[in-house]
Image (cartoon, rainbow, N blue to C red):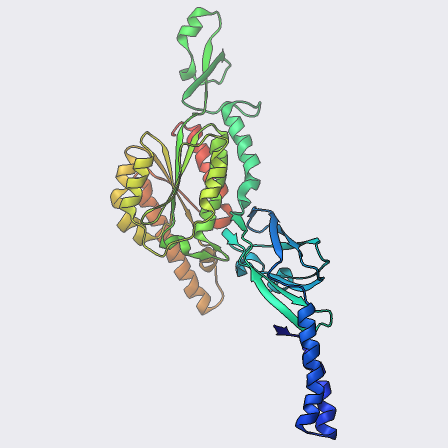
Length: 436
């Protein structure tokens, strides 16, 4: 049984004149006995909570930053009218801060034998699965003095997907891809390694492209045209170790790397390449392999959704071994990790030749825009010290990148907002140069 504020108010109002006029146990009993009887009658007339029936429907997936709507149907099978307050409990990260109380609580009235539907709007603030906890109902009597209370488990799961904010860059990169593939009239055909067709020679063409055998069979000089490579293998290796947990503003490094992964996956799938994913720290945490072109993006999104950084040092030797096991033939290995000197020089560099001698390796890292801001600071003594620290950090990243480049690694180092398009541009450049 739960008593309401109305009950406390009536008890106080009834006890006040007794305490002033005739303070005694008899006077208190004369006031509280009728009130207690009214409370018991009100409790007895309240609709039972245990017999209520609940079903859910609505959204099962939502992108981070968007809102999902989940409906809850309440059936009152009893013969009494249900007057209730209902709390639909979800994890705290299912709502924006400060909005949980208003979003999770509902008032409803359900006549005997009827059904009512409530809507709970979620605005998740974290990726992953958000599971409904339980539904708590407080059923009030007609006088509003007492209430029955109980809870029901009504399971439902909403999967919060990565936001994929970089998808706005996809149309421009697809246009560039069409230019490389020769399907538009803009510019010229891209250089590639796969023969496409023959056409007549025009002044300015590279003489190395002349097909002398075809020229001998016809009266005009013929040149070969090429198209970018297709059906190549691209393996995205995502480092989910300690360094991926660092926050750049409000976004962890891992989330920025995920956004770049999604843009690259969408672009490479449209280009006709086979894309795989490997997430690794000290073990394989997610894997996508052997998916058809039309299914790979959805599979990668589903694999990335529950991933969170692990606060352990990444096993570089194990990461390279896992990448080699998942890429048995020549591939483009896209490694999304950090450019911090210690993890790269002590962990990655000693085992990097195992990758570079068999595959083309592209390393993409998220830089901290705050460090760049520190390097530009001037005006005060503290600002000058900050500028020196920022300049030293940037110089260290450049030295680390130069060491990687000496092994033949293509390095992309960009802040969170531009990492995804920079990685896509590097992929298109490798494709145009026939290096996949």
